[in-house]
Image (cartoon, rainbow, N blue to C red; front, side, top):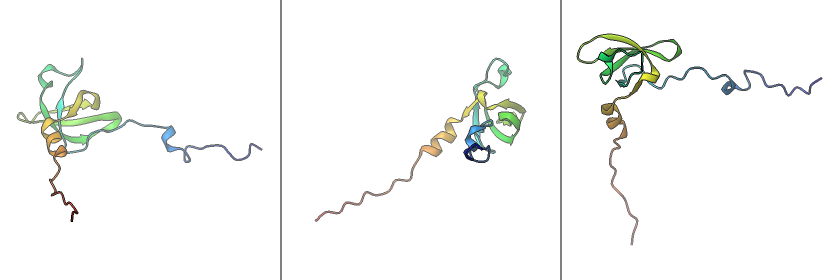
Length: 98
């Protein structure tokens, strides 16, 4: 009756976006915090140990070994992990000349 042009959830998976998980397990992050983040954790470096539901992560604080559960919005990539990702192996430049 309607020409069969009905888009279904299977046809368009981008229509229903879930929570994004910008970090992976064992990744180093820096806690930037928000109003609900305990002050003692703000500015500390941590390692992600578990990915939880709705964008939450279980972290282990480096140095103290404490565990805390925080949402992705209060985290950012650690400067030390960014520096290693940004480095590219240098390759010699080959010029074809006569």
